Structure formats: structure tokens, C-alpha cells
Image (cartoon, rainbow, N blue to C red; front, side, top):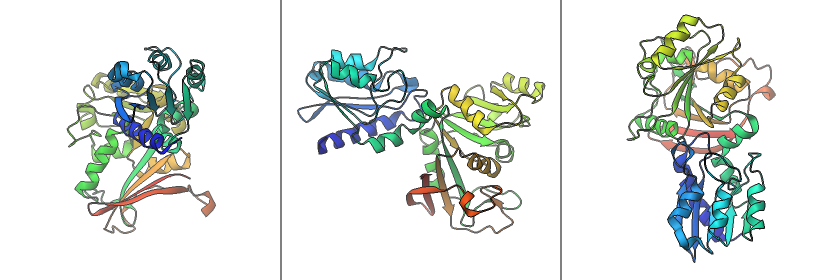
Length: 361
């Protein structure tokens, strides 16, 4: 591995990030083809997972791919799906070398891509910028290995950890810059998740706004009894923007029918709803990255179930006092060593607020 390898792989990772939130159930892969120190082709996974990054980069490179080096953020697929294996396309292009950031845990590929490239006489280097690639492909890897999407929990609170006053007033605790950042985060996830209490209290649309985007994430609400208002923003937009409602199997049939008529997809699970099963149901439908925006009870339940992979907190410079609504509901901890712990990844100022990003230690 050379310094150039790391530099070109970082370029590929930047390209792959362009597909986040748009390509599920596929991974958001990036690819750069370099010949004589010059980029001759580049690609990233297209909307809905097609085209793959490698085939798009090869298309751009054309004959210039012969003898060149391809930098790919995930081991090229070795199985037939809706398209032929990318590894075969790389072999046909007569590349001299393929540099891979990390292996593909999908059992249909898992090392087979590397073996086929080497068997064809192509030099392969693996593990370049592997740690960054693992972060980039966290959701895809989670879905393949754990059967559920990666989950990011977002909290926006006062400096004393409150998300609303005692009367429920919450708009707006954080400033416009922080809210814009949240919309950008929504755009990079496959779905936005809230609990029934938030859906009732805030009447959210859960859409990406102000960024000039036509694409929207799936909206997911967990509501055991489906006791959600059918004149809400979610209801009015259910036919235009995907809305999934996760309820218990014993939720009233008439409510399930009403929401189906409005255009929502109903996902009924055994009662009481197990959040691990709820996330598994999302994974079965292809989701790889879910952005949870509360409320406090759902946040606590996800933390208790050890389902939070990343925690992003926006903290505003105001205090609401003990009577305010807490960002995280009761966790029933008997001792400090029972508390969920995360490693700090980033702290920065956004407008008048502070963002902190925590990940699994």
C-alpha cells in the first residue's frame, strides 16, 4: 500500500457517500479507476442500487481501463443478481490491479471476488482505508451480519437534557443551522423513525426540506395500537412518500384498514412489540440505515435493547428545568456500570448549538 493508494481510496469513499440514503438494499460503493496518475473513470452506486459503482467507472474509462488500477470501497460482488457480477466486468476490462478497502460479508461474495480477480492474474491489495470503509458501509454490514439496519439516534435538547417544556412546547429549541444539518442527515439515511408519541404531539412530516432534493427517505412510525391521527401530515402524504407503520398484530383492524387506504404499509408484529424484531422487519424490507428522532420513550427503549449504533446530540444554550420533558425516558438503571456507553467521535459548533457524535465503543 502506498500513500497514493490511501489518497485514491479516500476519493472513492467520497464518491460512495453520494449514494447514501438512495441505494438500499445495496451498499453505497464508490470506485475510481486511475491510470498513470490520472483518473480515467469514476462511479458510485446509482439510485435503487443500479448501476453498480464499478460498472459505471468502467463505462467512463472505456479502453483506458486496460492496465489501470481500480480503487473500490467494498469487495466487488461475485454473484449474479439483477446484473452480472462486477468482478467479471473488472476482469474483462483487463485491469492490472484492484485496490479494495474492505471485504464484502455477503456470503455470496465474502472473499470470492478477491479469489476470482487473482485467478485472472489481477493484483489485489486489500484493507486500504478499511476503518473509514467500515464506517461508510456500517448499515449494509449490519443488515447482512445482524439482520437489521444500523440505527442512529438523534437528540435535540436544552443543555439540561430537555426536549420540551412541561406543557410540551418544543419548537424550536435548536437553531436553524442545526435543523438544516438534521435535514442533511435525514437525506443520508434510508428511513426516519419516530414513536407514536412524537407523531401525535409534533405532527411531523419527517421529510427532507430546504436542500432541493426530490428523493425522500421512508418514514417509519412505531405505534402499538395505531392510535395516530388520520388527518396528520403523515397521513396526507402517505401516497406520495413511503410511510411504514409498525403496530401490534392485535391493533384494531379498522385502523389498519384506514391507514392502508391512505397509502401506508402496515407491518404487524406480535404484541408486545419487540424493537429488535421491528428493526429486523425493516432489514428484511431492505433498509440499511435508520435515523431515529425520538421521542424520549422510544430513545430509552432502543438504548435498553442495545440497538443504538450512533448517537448524535444537538445541545442548545438554554435550560428548561427539571419539569421539562427529558430527551431520554427512564432506563431503570440500578448501577452506573449498567449504563450504555459510547465513544466520542466528534464535537463541533453548528450555529448557536453544539453537535456531539458518539458511536459504539
